[in-house]
Image (cartoon, rainbow, N blue to C red; front, side, top):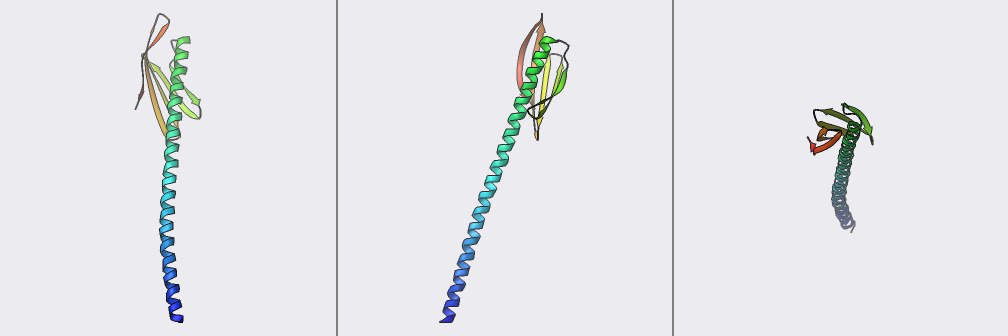
Length: 125
């Protein structure tokens, strides 16, 4: 009778180990998926902040150009992003860096008779 109880206990332990292994694999898979989603969301947020910071740099440059046609650019801090603005030959380039994300926007403009006209507004690589 004692040998039968030990055998049953051995099967119970093996069954328990089997289910524990399967459970750990499932939990590990879920944790990996959750971490990947968190990293993707963080990367998306960084890209969004850097994009809108670059656009803010362009808008700032347009205002400054209206006030001073000799404006050539500057470096700014916008929403935690570092934004470099360059103005030359009818082109404004705004490059924003936020953490690991870098976004650039380029605007072509014409300045005639105290009127500034935007001819192109695009994101560049």
